[in-house]
Image (cartoon, rainbow, N blue to C red; front, side, top):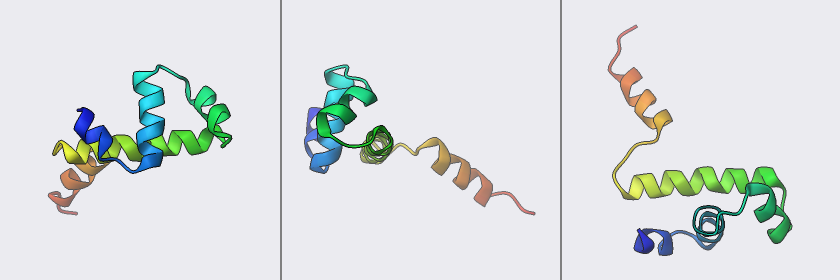
Length: 73
C-alpha cells in the first residue's frame, strides 16, 4: 500500500497521508494547507478513486455505470 500511495500525485499523497495515516480531519488539513475544506474533500475523493483503480477495483459510481451498460431500455 505504501508503494501505491507513493505513486500518487503529490497533492493526493499529502492529503491522503494526513487524513488516513495521521488521522487529521479534512478541516485540519484544509487549515494546514491554507485551502478550502471542499478542496481537501475533492482531493480525498480523487485520491481514493486513483488508489482503487490501482488495485483494480471500481468505485461505486463506476460499478453502477457498468451495471447500467448491460441494461436495455
